[in-house]
Image 1 (cartoon, rainbow, N blue to C red):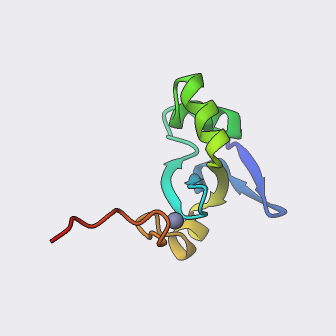
Image 2 (image 1 turned 30 degrees about the vertical axis):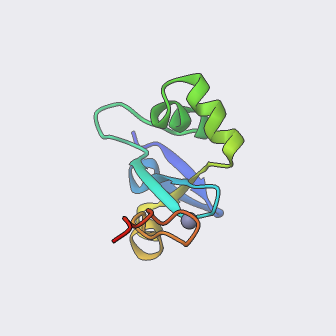
Length: 97
Ligand SMILES: [Zn+2]
């Protein structure tokens, strides 16, 4: 049996979906498979939050800071999302020369 989820009005297999975490500035910073293929699945944002932040206090802080999660297709992720991209707001600070 395949678990299906609806993304942007389309039904996709959960195994073809990934959770993307976004920083408050809007940059993607982390990605996680929604279905690990071993019976462990993250079908809801709540489940995904728990995996990204096992501790409730960390989850609460992240939400408060403006972090958010989005379920997207793996294809969308491959084509449009770069978790290594940083904007000026979240660029790692350069060491002073
Ligand atoms: Zn940023």
